[in-house]
Amino acid sequence: MTEEVEQTVALAEGGGDAAAVDVDDVAVRFRTRKKDVLALRQISLSVATGEFVAIVGPSGCGKSTLLKLVAGLLKPSSGAVRLHGDAVTGPRRDIGYVFQRAALLEWRSARRNILLQAEMRHMPGAAARKRADELIDMTGLRGFEDAYPHELSGGMQQRVALCRALLHRPPVLLMDEPFGALDALTREQMNIELNRIWRETGTTVLLVTHSIAEAVYLANRVVVMSARPGTVTEIIDVALPAERDYAETMGLEEFSSATTRIRRLLGAAPGAE
Amino acid sequence: MEHGRTPTVPAASAATVAGVAERARPGIADRALETLARSWRPLALLVACFAVWWVVSAARLVEPYLVPSPGSTLQVMRDKAGYIWHHGWVTTYETLLGFAIAVAVGVLAAVIMVYSSTVEKTLYPVLLFAQVVPKIAIAPLFIVWLGFGIAPKIVVAVLIAFFPVVISMVTGLKSVDPEMVQLSATMGAGPLQTFVKIRFPASLPHLFSGLKVAVTLAVTGAVVGEFVGANEGLGFVILQANGNLDTPMLFAGLIVMSLIGVVLFLLVEIAEKLLLPWHASRRGDAVTTTY
Ligand SMILES: Nc1ncnc2c1ncn2[C@@H]1O[C@H](COP(=O)(O)OP(=O)(O)OP(=O)(O)O)[C@@H](O)[C@H]1O
Ligand SMILES: [Mg+2]
Image (cartoon, rainbow over all chains, first blue to last red; front, top):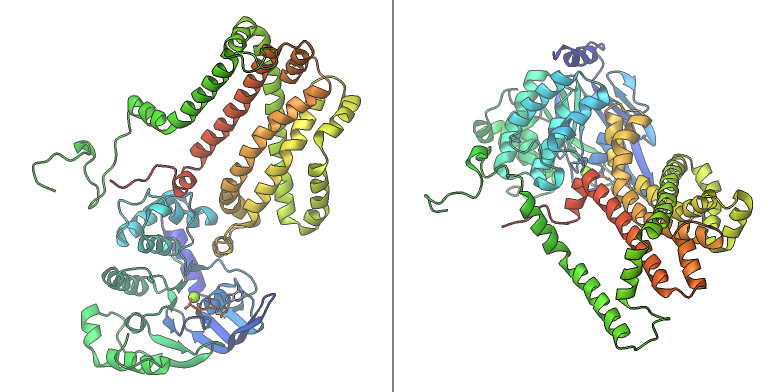
């Protein structure tokens, strides 16, 4: 049933030992009628297959832009982006993307929004529906499958978008502040779920977040970006085991040293979140 | 809530998730009441208009040959029901055909224009020209070209209804959230799939606001076509009645014509509600309420 879907993962992983995501000295310049904006400059980043990388940085520093670059939704002004070794020249379908705004279709119920992924990819119907049900249960959306987006809360909309991005078990998952609209507790639960999904599927994950704790709890490495024009200030290795208990992790020495370091880099006061 | 009080939801569909319960479908009587509650105001206004009309003619404020009484108008409508029915149907038929063609051609033109900016730049001035030239002025030309039959009426109806369809559809197709299109690209969808599953449905609310304008204009178009040369249709009825100073018949014609327009408008609105329930509720036309 799910073999077809699993195959994509296997295929992608079998693509040699090239990094899953490779961003090589990229710059992005936006040209609008009134001004030129240099959003990113000299960005280089290499993400190994199966790695979890979180990206933090001040608002407007180009995090979303970086993610869209990797997905092939934007073209770099200079430099190159590679996914599993081959150059990204246009939109890539071997990814799952969670947009910063949920980007749901208003005329589809939650479940049909999730299944859009399956329809577009011509996935076998029964398997896709079963997978959607799993995801709905996992994200706590049960009971709201038939609700339209305008009937859902902001956090629920984000969870629908997350389910949609996970439906086809993508080898690379790109997430742009997927939990921004969630309350602290649900956010913790979603973090724990995401950690579990990542461990179980071996998916490569790039996660943009504003929460330093979330970044450190989830990631192998945290990329700290500078204000616009965005560039990589530092990449922090998080020396924590893959399987992480939430409360326990928060109390670990490695955890607090990493968060403190990131806070410093972002220029915030050590105690502030 | 106090325990012991029966909840207002049927027990059979007790809450599925915390705080959420399915609602039973309202009965016919409930729905009729709701419709009445929603529509009594315009009905009351209509009755008031009739009352004023009745007072004006009963008090002889104007001569009956200028403004007939409501009674004599209704009398004509009853006596000549078959005649009015026949001509009313002709006008309706022309309107519907003209509207259908305008929608088909308009939507197609809009799609092509949105996907090709060359076509858009070429076609827009032509469209604009076709829109600003007064249809009544060119209608006689169509009679010369196409004869006295139904064809020239339909052409005028199409010409007049076409513009709002194109404009609304172009606006709709262009106002799709670019992130939706990007989303579609990450799913590996081609242009056709993106159009069918995202662009087209997203443009429907705009299209429907154009359709509502277009359908009322289509009635005008058909009648204008009949004015310049016809032996059938409400336009013809009104011209004849005018020539005979038969004001009751003239008023009857006007009333039926307005009714056709209103009914067609309501049909488009009902179609919109049925096809786009998500949009109607987002706009805040009932559906979701707190209590
Ligand atoms: N389509 C666009 N056209 C013009 N400028 C753009 C466009 N998209 C982004 N920018 C500019 O690029 C810069 C980076 O934008 P981006 O959305 O990547 O920021 P971000 O880091 O995701 O911010 P946030 O944390 O607030 O989401 C911003 O200054 C923004 O104004
Ligand atoms: Mg962003």
